[in-house]
Length: 402
Image (tube, rainbow, N blue to C red; front, side, top):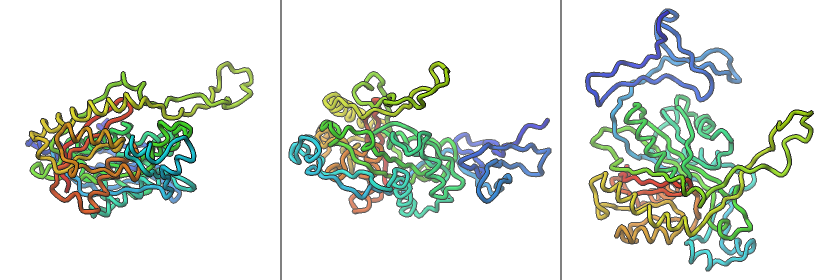
């Protein structure tokens, strides 16, 4: 029997540049590979059932992609819920005040999902903004990477976002790296471009931590907001490569300082098991967020300057070469401490923490999008960005915008 032909070309003589053929892979369904004996031309089809057709569909419109390319950020977008909750509003819920919150965190307002709003809608809106800025059509997106700790669907949100956007030829998958998600997602996108020949990659982060906040605990409920942010990463020549250096880290021993574990609900999933032992199990959910604020603060203060310095060393740069410092928007005191340790002046620090609070996976792309749209960040600017949070995870990247 002849081997199934997938249609990938043989690597060229140049080990740094190879060609990759793309089929029209659907987000759902099985991949069906047909041998050369069955068809005159090789193809990859998706056995999926839609409302309009139950027949096998496939695409012969293949585009050769080059492997070994650089990556550049060419578009950004963001979205936030309509409901804004101020510190004064928080003072009506827990024992606190605007002064107490703002002095300790730098936060004055946060946005929270209400009514018919959902996280998927925010993510799609943010992604559309990035596509418009980049002037890239959804059908030309090759990959959608979505990171979130609070997706609308237990199984993740990337495929639904891909479908809602109309990225018909794109692979879509989820990653989870909490507040480090932007950096991890960005590096993942560049690896798919460099090693897999992908051209246009949507990188989307969104979180709705308000769903898992204990609104009676003033140590956590004052901190978090809901939002989404996205960037479009595009392949370019190696000379134009906008990723100058990066560094990624994890330390699972610190998980006890910031977590939300699975817990059994008060009632069993079903009351009568008809004699079956231990089945079905209790219906599970997640606990509210538990955080040791002092330990998380010390972790950020210690690790973020180190990871940024590691990325600068990787890029062969110093902090004086940085146009903008963009950190995960967790606490203004952490942001100020890191900029001081790196000797980066405050006028080069991007922060919108006061308006949105800690939006976890969305915080960096949300702040970046605002800075780009208000003209602060311009094409060619060098940005040092870093994320840090639950896991514990932390990482950084030195990138050029545009």
